[in-house]
Image 1 (cartoon, rainbow, N blue to C red):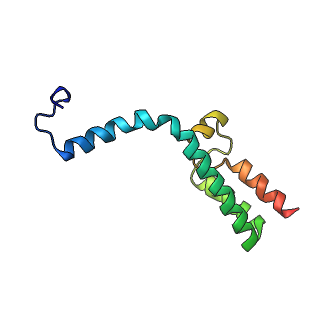
Image 2 (image 1 turned 90 degrees about the vertical axis):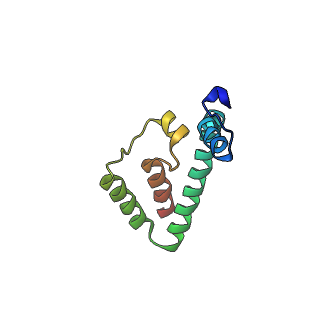
Image 3 (image 1 turned 120 degrees about the horizontal axis):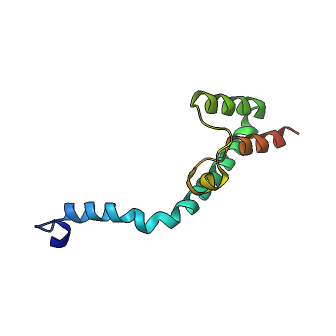
Length: 100
């Protein structure tokens, strides 16, 4: 650990060094975790559509994205890799399909 600037080994220093190095090793898991999160969002939307009117959910999603100044059309590659929530048009499309 002396090569990393830590003169006295400790659990605190080891934890700090681990947290600094972890993103390098978990980077490739990012899209898998985002995909799992998006799957859960679709499940939550489907459940909410069963409990209430899907039109109200669509209205709430549009308002939420507008109020937070989020784009309704994110880059698909960036979104697939980083976003934990599906893009609004995809969510709205699935909710609209439940209306029919």
